[in-house]
Amino acid sequence: MSVSPYIQPSHPTRMLAAVLYKPGDIAIGEVNCPLPEPHEVAIRIHVCGVCGTDHSLFAGTFPAQYPVIIGHEFSGEVISIGSSITTVKVGDRVTVDPNIVCNLCNYCRMGHSHLCENLSSMGVHKHGAVAEYCTVSEANVYKIPDTVTFAEAAFCEPLACAVHGVDLANIKQGDVVLVLGAGGMGNLIAQLSVLAGASQVIISEPILYRREKALLNGATCAIDPVHQDVEVELRKIRRIGADVVFEVAGNLKLQAASIRYTRRGGQIVWFGCSPSDGKLEVNPYEINDAEIKISGSFNNPYSTGRAIELIANRKVRVDNLVSHNLSLKNYLDVFQLFGQSNTLKIMVHTN
Image (cartoon, rainbow, N blue to C red):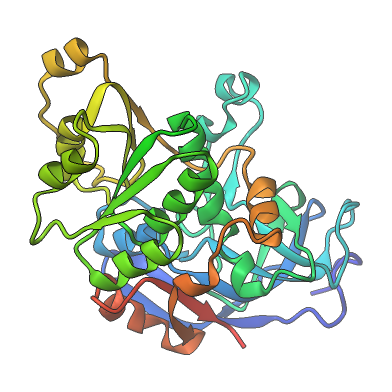
């Protein structure tokens, strides 16, 4: 088979990848290396972060199109470019927005492309980045400064999601913010809340290691919900409750409890990814009477460039959130490590 002229002669033909065949069935093996279409670039992946969504895909609580190469938080180097590419070149260091939108549906044309009716995402609906190589549309590729490491750049996707969530919260100077869950996302949201002007950022997290990281990164108070009553501890700090509550764990009980933790007129952001078949029982009278605003937060619209700037200018710290570094061939260890007491952010390296 002849190779299209826009493919670099050195472009590999086979690669190692983590393929999810169905819930609970994932394997590391050799697959064909993708070739870029005219509007795409091929990337040599250096680092891919592990997301809670990846674990949910493996567990079967989040729907996917199988088989699929898992992973969507990544960075790497451009190795080949399609014939129509104008903004990046071979050798550029890049990160990626993994969400592909149509730009044609009503939501896209209303400026809400993250709610696109035809949305597809790398690592979920199309092949992702726990692999040696991938191809991505030029529109989704962002160059990163030389001062940002590949490991730091792999945080750009989750940080962009956190930026969007904090935007939705509309934090005001002096606000009291409560973050339920201090995993990687909770830690990022806590840091962004401080940057947004919160005077108190309280985190609730059962794992000591994660609480300690959040305090190191700017949280003002940490609650252990296993041994402390979150509402009692919160009201010692702010009698009327928090101005803003983020639920970051995707835990239905925590989402219900967030209503009790919020002051009258306050804002709740349900950020965590809940089970797709989850149900929540709430008292609408309480929400109406207290004029509590509840918002979901989905994806990372127009936030990737901002995330790069935050990391490049050292406004958000990500390096100390990494608890484990794995090689691609050992990726399956992720599912034993995920959620353990000494685990925060797991990074997969391909070299």
